[in-house]
Length: 365
Image 1 (tube, rainbow, N blue to C red):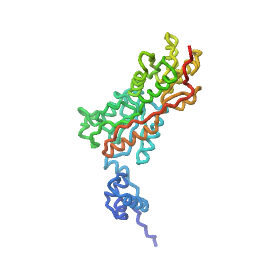
Image 2: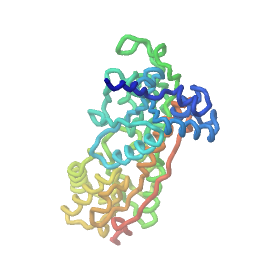
Image 3: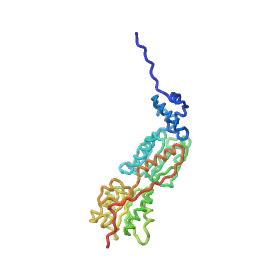
Image 4: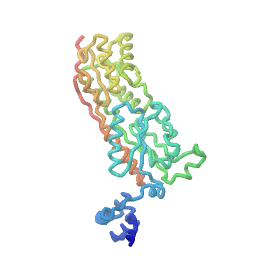
């Protein structure tokens, strides 16, 4: 006799989970969608998760995304992938995202801080929001045109442009204000206290007795570097100090060349070189060695960022430590808050001067 066929075992549904836990399907959706806080008690949430585990229930994320317009994916835009700082920002953002069932897509602006093109043809359905780190304001036009929630890291805090506030149709001919259900959100900000960092550098050098300064400044046109320059100029007492500024691209060779040119054509040699970045400081140290000058005996050098490079050079760099991973974590937390319908407070994270061997009192004439 033929063996009776066993009926196919169907996958458990959210209704099965609701029945097993003794709750409604809406409660199951809230708990398994991680939106239960403040709506469902911790005991009920635990019951729902336990029932789902016992039944082997797995939500259909693809169907859920289509239903809710939610892909649980954020885009992190950075100026470049070659800088350790942005790798650490990504690490922090990805860690916080993972804790909430989100993923982070990393995207470098194709032109450094130039216009960041929309990396997806249909960003509205591919992403839930955008985090932009250290980008120039004008570089975000295409991303803002998507109407997605936007969190800006290390960027101009006065830029509160509403990403959903578009004039006229989008590139695909649709009206952004009519098609985006995310609501209207002004850009949220997470910033580093870079001005305070430069204040700390200047006060450290002034305390050592330095009065002649050269600022080896980044030629990149972003808020963070403008803020550093303003803070330095404001901190140095007028009349009793001199400040000369030289701009350089953000690489060792350009920094070395810029400082060599400045020191061989100038008339009043500085006793301290203040750099906008550790990479620039490494180039400055190379320039001084090539000119037969010693760090810090002849000229002190400071950096900014506290990259791994800061302790790889000799002498090790006095620099400003930036909590890059915390920037990423705070940025992702701000985006999650916006997606939950909250308005996050703009955040400024403290920075710390780390004194090492590249600074000392100026040599006596």
